[in-house]
Each structure stands twice: as structure tokens, then as C-alpha cells.
Length: 582
Image (cartoon, rainbow, N blue to C red; front, side, top):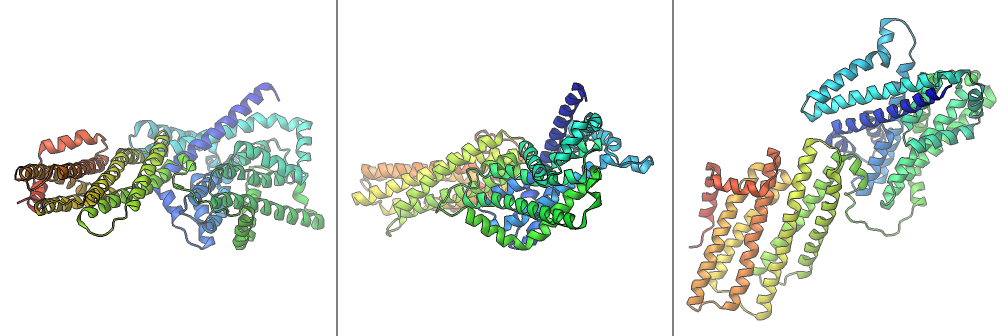
């Protein structure tokens, strides 16, 4: 084997790993929100979880990707440890699909049908179709399909290159002696685990083993322990992804490790125990691509059949290993692991910003209710809500900036832009709840009160603002652009109400019905209402523009009003009649 064969082997491995990465990521994109939806629709039934894990891993062609995703879901609190166990077992079986796909390159035969099944025959055609879809289509869906086809072809090209590069090893005695030493089960398991831990993909390491099998010197006895070790080595990815997570997420990674270690141990003891009694004749036979796929599948299916009823035992082992310490982590939905799966990360961010919106609007509503009630106001609760919204803005903003740098679909990119546009407005609305609270406290502490006329006017303004808050919140949560169009006309009505109240206050000052001291408090209240209405409009416009795929909320807000469309005027006149100061 020359140095050029080594170079070819390195290049083939690079193409193989890159192709697998491209295909896996493109499959995740194509699955989109459906992928997270499938994982989210879990029950306490472990078998259903197994089927889901099997299906998802078959789609994304990576048990590591599925397991890392599951660790993230458990960390975020949307999946229990018990639900995760079934998926992990299914992921181990699902990853065998890759080995069967790769085994196609080992098909022998001269007939047209047999030749057509060989990747070297149909891969070039798929590559041609893939590049046309990727370069000519403007739709993300078609581009993703093109990338999937290209990734598969790159992967198979790498496989063929590796197989060709290692063929000279068949005539080298040291290479044969090396794999004879792997017949020692312990050494074989350690080698398989070590290689897989380094490249962090059992599918890739199985593919490398299949490429090496083309030399004709790898036997069943040397391949079997390596394959078992590969399943253990793939646990490294999940373990690394669990760093910095909560206890249940760490337990999920532990379950993955325990499952494969126990499974490998049972399989080794069973196989070599029977071999000691029966003396399998095939153990010294050479093994090819399909043989490796068979062992890989047999091991994972057998282990799952044995361990599936013992899911509760695995859970108890993980609980015993990683004990509770009373830790209560915040913002677990914003898991760094999901940055590698943008669709899931966007979905989690949407859930969190919806929570932020509810806290922000509820806090402001609580504060304005303080102006028209004689009951004791929970100032501490309003303050706590405002501080919570501040934290949401900080955490979401930082996470979304990282997320926006990832490769994602156009739809996900638009959703991120919308969230980034509104979190500042939500935070400012929350700030004004404190301004209203301060005004209430000043009225209470100084034992002053507005005139009946002023109270009536503020009540009308309050009613209009409450309707605006409701429309804005529902439009944002439901992503309803039609409802969002009702917000800005109402903002204009509120601005006019504020102007009328200010003019009436000046008249009351002249008539000595009101005081300068109350005027300062009134000014603070009116400013809060007016500014909140402006922030509501920004949020509503962001919803509208997300449907138009164009984000320029402030410019759009001006254009919408200046254009004075028939719809705008109709909504404006409706609210103007409903909220007017007589």
C-alpha cells in the first residue's frame, strides 16, 4: 500500500463524513417542524417511544442526532426521562438503516438489475438531479431535496474511494495479523468504541469497517466485537451534549450509555458462551458489507428486545447514578444543543417569547387596574413580572443572535426576525407597568385624587388600551395578520384620546378644578398609555410584515397610516365611535 493509497483513504473518509453531514442536516431541514412535532407527541408507552425513535433516526440517518435532540428535549422539560428511554432504544435500531444502504456497494452480479442497485451506477444520476434542484430552484424544499441527494452521492463516493484505497491491504500480512488480534472481544470492543468516539458517529464507523471489509481479511470473529464497541462509542456525543444540562438530561445520556454497555455485555456473553459450547464454524469466515449490516442489525434488535421491558430498570439506574440536588434551572428551552437543529430551536424560542408576551401584558394590565381600584395592589408581583420580562429579553436576545448565524429555512429565519423585533417592545411595555405603579403609589401616598371628569376620561382611555393589548397579544400568539391590522388604527384613537385628556386637563387647571401636582401624575400616566400603544403597533406590524417576508416595522407603520387604506379608515372610525370623550 503506497502513500497515495493513504491519501486516497483520507480523502475518501473526508468525503464520506462530509456527505453524511450534508445529508443528515438536509434531512433535518426537510423534516422541519414535523420532526420536533413527532418527538413531542409522546406518551408514557415505551414501545410507542421506540417506534418514534426508530422512525426519526431512519429519517435523519443519525442516532447521535436523535439522542442529542432527546437530551435537549428532556433538558427543556417538554419530555420526561421515561419517554426518552423508548426513543433512545428506537434510535439504536434506526441507525442500522445506514449500514444497509452502504451495503449496496458490495452487491455482486452482472445483470442489469443487479448493476442498477449498485450506488456506483445510480449515484451519478442522483447527483445530477440533486445539483439541478439545488442550483436552479428558489424553494427551500427543493433545495433541501437537492442537498440530500448530493450528500448521499458524496457519501457513496467517499465509500467507494475508501474501498479502493484499502484493497492493497489484502496482501499485507501485518494487516491480517492486526484483525486477528481484534478477535479478542475486549480489544475489539475497545477499538470500535475508540474510533466511534473520535468521529462521533456509529454510522460512519460502521461504514469505515464496511470499506475495510473489501480487503477480504476481516472475519466475523474480528468484526463482531468492533461493531459492539461502535454502539458504545456513539454514546460520547450524547454525553458531551449533556454537559451543562439539568439532572434529567444527564440521566438521559446515562441511559443511552447503560443501554449500550449492558446490551454489548449480554450479547458478548451470549455469543461467546454459545460458541464455547457449539463452536460456530462461521466465526473464521470473512465478512463483507452485508454481513456487517446483518450483525449490526442483529445486535441492536436483540439488545432492544431484551432491554425494552427493562426500561424502568434503566431509569432507576440513571436516577441512582445522578441524584437530585434541588437544582431548578431557568430558561431550559433555550438549549445550546438545539442550535444544531434550528427548526427545533426556533420552535422553543417561540414558546418562550409567547410566555414573555403573556407576562408583559399581564403585568401592564395589573398595573392599570391599580388606578381604578381601592383594593391593595400586589406591587411586589408587578415588579417581579417586570424583572422576569427583562431576563426573558436578555436570554432570548442572546440565544437568537447565536441561532440566526445557523443555516436554516426561510420560514425559520422570518420567525427569528419577528421575535427579535418584538422582544424589545415587550420589555418596554413591561417597563411602563412600573411607571403606572409609581403613579398609583404617588396618588396613594400623597392622598390626592383626580376629579370625576378626569377619572371618567382615564377610564375610557383604559378601556381602549385593554382592547389594544388583547388584540396585540392574540395577533402575536396566533400569528394572525388580520387581527394585527386592527391595532394601529386603535393606536391613533388612543393618541387622540391622550391629546383630548391633556387639553381638558389644561381647561380644568384654568378653572381650578385640578392642580399642577395632579397634572404631573396625569402626564406620566398618559405617556405610559401612549407609549404602550406605540409598542403594540410595532408588535402588530412585525406580525404583518412576517407574512410579507419584509421586516421594517417602523417604516411600515408610517406607510400603513399615511396610505389611509379603506380598511384602515373603516377600523379607525369604528374605534373612534366606541372610545370618545364627550
